[in-house]
Amino acid sequence: MSKRYDIAIVGSGPAGLSAALNAKIRNKEFVIFGNKNLTTKIVKAPKINNYLGFPGTSGEGLKERFQEHLKAMDIEITEERINSIYAMGEYFALMANDKAFEAKTVILATGIEYTKPIKGEEEFLGKGVGYCATCDAPLYKGKTVVIIGHNKEAEAESNYVSEIAGKVYYVPMYKGTYNLSDSITLIEDKPEEVIGDLKVKKLLLKNSEIETNAVFILKDSISPGQLVPGLKIEDDHIAVDRLMKTNIKGCFAAGDCVGKPYQYIKSAGEGNIASLSAVKYLDELSRK
Ligand SMILES: Cc1cc2nc3c(=O)[nH]c(=O)nc-3n(C[C@H](O)[C@H](O)[C@H](O)COP(=O)(O)OP(=O)(O)OC[C@H]3O[C@@H](n4cnc5c(N)ncnc54)[C@H](O)[C@@H]3O)c2cc1C
Image (cartoon, rainbow, N blue to C red):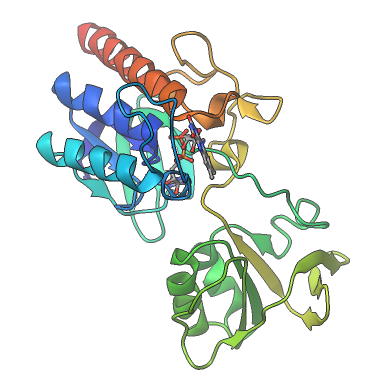
C-alpha cells in the first residue's frame, strides 16, 4: 500500500509554500506538489512593494528568499503535476501522470489561469480536447495530436506523446527555444477555435489550420472543478469559508484559486489558515 500523507498540498506558489511551512511546524507528514521554480507568477513580477518586510524586491529576489526558507526548513517540492483528485471518504487519491498518492487532507493552492479558453475548448472537452497529454496519449496511438503548450514543461510532455501518437504538432504560447523531438512539427501561430462534430476534427489558427484527432492544452493550472470532481465553484473560484474549508470534508483551498484580490501576501496568509485548519481536522480525526 502506498504511503498515506496527513496533508497533500497542490501548488508551489506563496499559498502552497506557506501551507507547507505550517504543516512542517505542526509536525505533519505532508507532500507539496509543484515545481522547484515555485511559480511563474513570481518570476514575472518586475518589482514588488506590497509584500511585508521585502520593499522593492524583484519577483526573482522574492523567489530566492522563498527557496532559502524552504531549504532552512528542510522542505522539498515534489515535481509532479496532479491531474485529478478523488475524495474517497476517509482519504483522498491524487493522480499524477503515472503515479498515485494518498492523503488524509488536501490543500488546493493551484493559482488561477489568466488565459481564457479558446472557442470550442469547453464544448469538446473530453471529446478530443484534454488537459493532460500523457494521461490520454494511449487513446491516440498512431493518430494526430496537437499540443498547445503554455510553459516549458509542455515540451517534455509532447516528446513523450510523440513516441505514441502518429503525428504531433506543437503550438507554443510563449517565446523561446523549444526542446522538441525531431518528429514534432512546430507551429508558431495563434490558436483560435477547435472544430468538430461528435469529436474534434480540426484546430483553426490565425493563419493556418490543422486536421487532428485531439487538442491538448497544457497550462500552469487546470480549473479546480476539473481537478476535484464535486468541488463547489462560485464565480469561477473555489468556494471557501473563513477557515479555508471547501464543501468537501478534509479539502481546503488557498490563494488566487479561491478569489480576488490576486496578491502574494493574501495567498500566503490563506495558505497559513488552510494548513492550520487541516491540522485541526487531522487532530479531530485521530480522536475519533
Ligand atoms: C506579472 C505579475 C506581477 C505581479 N505582481 C504582484 C505584486 O507586485 N504584488 C502582489 O501581491 N501580487 C502580484 N502578482 C500576483 C501574484 O503573483 C499572485 O497573486 C500569487 O502568485 C498567487 O499565489 P498562489 O500561491 O495562489 O498561486 P500561484 O503563484 O499561481 O502558484 C500556483 C502554483 O501551483 C502550480 N500548480 C497548479 N496546478 C497544479 C497541479 N495540478 N499540480 C501541481 N502543481 C500545480 C502552478 O504551476 C504554480 O506553480 C503578480 C502577478 C503577475 C503575473
